[in-house]
Length: 218
Ligand code: AP5
Image (cartoon, rainbow, N blue to C red; front, side, top):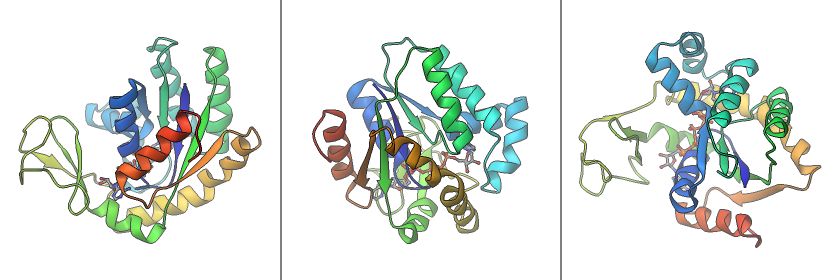
């Protein structure tokens, strides 16, 4: 099964993708994570992407579709994939169709996380991750069980993303409205879009997504 999680910044795509990886053995392909890894490693793609990401704008379609194709090539066909943060433009949606069909994969579900944009700024500016294992936390919504210590690896170093400030978040939301939301009709025409209330509690969102994947209603 191959699915897209769609929603504006902070909607909970990464949070829910991580849970699906744990519960279903699917693989999460997050273009944001892959680009951040490229920036950290100082690769040619990372050097091109760094300033664009820090401004909250979109990296070129060619670059992101290229890294998605390469990532899929490294996966066995039977491994289900969660596309997190991709596609984000009409051009990327068309590229994904080609990328999938060239690899004999289908797209089974597009799940849109519906959220109230005003609440997203609080979600994003409060977000932080473990610098060692990448586990995600939030100042208010998901604190570590022991203050200052990662629940998963017990590390004590945490980091925040450079693009998680209010001004950049507003630009990222505008980019989502202008370029990403318009791709939904492509998938609606195929009858594969489901919507989930992304403002519910995290575990309720997880249950709603599971119902869709298991063939029930959200
Ligand atoms: P990317 O990394 O994809 O960022 P994004 O889309 O802005 O999404 P986020 O990671 O910010 O949010 P999320 O929905 O995953 O939320 P999360 O689960 O963390 O992209 C970054 C940049 O890379 C882009 O701006 C662009 O420059 C570039 N890029 C990436 N892909 C690209 C592409 N395809 N094309 C071009 N450029 C690309 O949740 C947020 C917080 O809320 C967390 O702290 C979480 O704990 C909390 N939370 C989650 N769910 C809930 C809930 N139900 N209730 C309360 N709190 C919750």
